[in-house]
Amino acid sequence: DMSQPGLHNDLPHPDKSVYSNSTPVPRWGTTASYMPNMEAIVFSGGQVDDSGSMTNETLVLDMSGLKNLQKTRASSKHTPWLLVREAHGSERVPGLAYASSTISTSNCASGPQDTFWLVGGKTEHCKTDDAVLYTLSLERRAGQLVGAWRSIQTKGPKPPRRAHARAIFRPNGFGRDGSAAVGGQGGEASGGE
Image 1 (cartoon, helix red, strand yellow):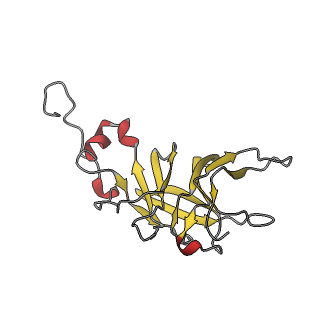
Image 2 (tube, one colour):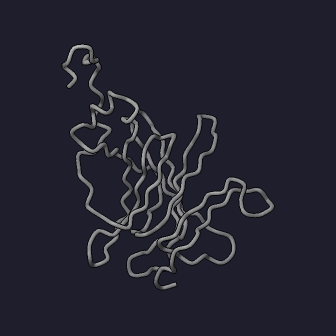
């Protein structure tokens, strides 16, 4: 109770306009990873019904309130799902379930930048022409969270799509050239490939 003596009840109320008022559709087979520099968990995709319908929805859960009493107060009555605006030129990610994800962090002039990597997963109708690897970059612009999806083209033969796998980011790559690499480990072959 913030009205008790000795507690800081004079904190200004935070801007709740950054939060979504809607409740996400229940789903399973979604992938999630924590973006430490955004202080948020990114959820992507998932199956939304028994007929196999999959979503490409991206949800971002604000975790900054765990360290900041003011933001905890803002989310006390609602789950703090952040609104994400799509950046100009962002690509469309197909509906996926059972994909894997990982986070990489690079040091940019503006500070550390997290990238969400989405790898494999099952697609509706076992489509095989979609990319296997996507990235999501999030940034705060004028108080808004803006996201941009990009498909990543791989060199050589297209790797098979995997479900229930683990994504691995290696900043120094797997080979001798020292470039960064993302790979998948384990899982099962996703139908149609």
